[in-house]
Image (cartoon, rainbow, N blue to C red; front, side, top):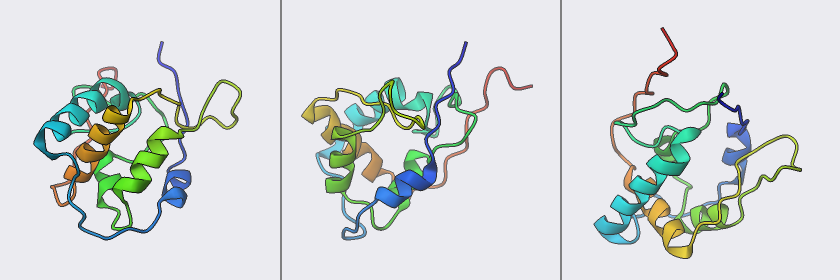
Length: 133
């Protein structure tokens, strides 16, 4: 049975902090590849993280795609790192928001590199849920 987790997009948008637009992805190609792999394994349950993502997110309420996050001209590597280090939800938090993952510093850098590498790419198509006719 799929579990619904609500992550209000407005809450994420409200947390974004200013940075220099067009900032390149930190960490290089290897970090981007590792970040993409991790995002597909963990983040894709709630977000569209890649154009070739196999399954649709399970949430009834949409969360921002990684591409939408990357396209925000005010998004910075610094903000993404801080956001991923201090994420939000535990079983006592209401309303439910993004769960806390105990990412290592390298994983945070890799996911940050992947997200920022998506700037300027063609928009993702949301994968279809296997249960949708």
